Length: 84
Image (tube, rainbow, N blue to C red; front, side, top):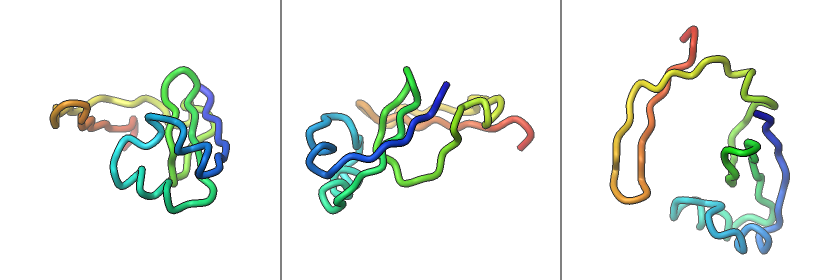
């Protein structure tokens, strides 16, 4: 899957309902002029401050090693990358 990076103004970002899925993320958007957006085509679209690959193939195989239900709309996923 291709990973696209683009930037939105604070006003554009605040109009997108699920852009930040946590309260700290929403507060951060309110305090920034420009928000970096990561779009993993057909999978996820989020505000993000981390670094990312250009294509998910760069990561290699991902193994699901754990999953926790932390409540309504809150899940924790644990993964391991091949070779680590």
